[in-house]
Length: 282
Image 1 (cartoon, rainbow, N blue to C red):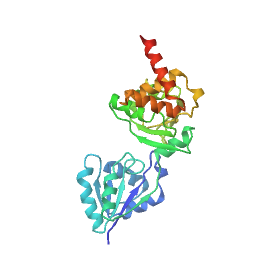
Image 2: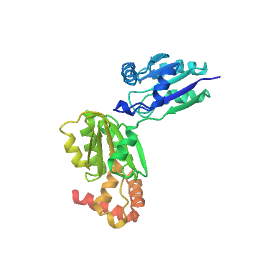
Image 3: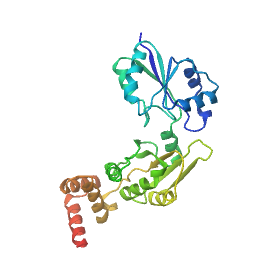
């Protein structure tokens, strides 16, 4: 019989949030694959747990090479526990490759549910939670980051992002440029830790705040695009939306058609607004 792959959620800050089952799995697993073995050691010490199985590292740098070894252990009947530094494995963390490989070999995959920065930030943000999408980390390069944000400029669902503290100001500024400075957002910092902070406001305001520097683990929650009828979109907004799509690589004709469809207005109205804006710039 094949073994079992267990994806275990770990605390995102306060170790007291660790689910009771995590301690049992750590103590009984044949193999514990950890993103950082030093952090794993601190976690087991805090939980008062002694691992009896083999401990191996499993992080971005060795994920491709280590996966076949772990799959072989699973096929041989081992119970493999996968943990990352914080939160659920494979959610912007190592794990996806191992899960996919295990599924391909008909290995059972289960999970120990645990704390989630995505859901915690979403719940604390004060923004709509009925529909949301997780966008992970924005691209590091400015041009790629803008292009990715433009892809979701008209997304109606609440958006959730992870971001490194040293890139937060640039990312918030880019969001303000693409989504508009008044779009509501929340920056959640150091969730469940001693210096937890949730900063809420418009993207422009938050970008100014972050310019002075921010520390800690960051999750950003952004309000989805508002539903607007034709009366709510003036010519300037129609032109702005066309330009956003053009800058993302769309031809003007397709951009005008898409904006008109989303706004519920005739294509001619959008075309006239774009032509008028070009004449005004001359």
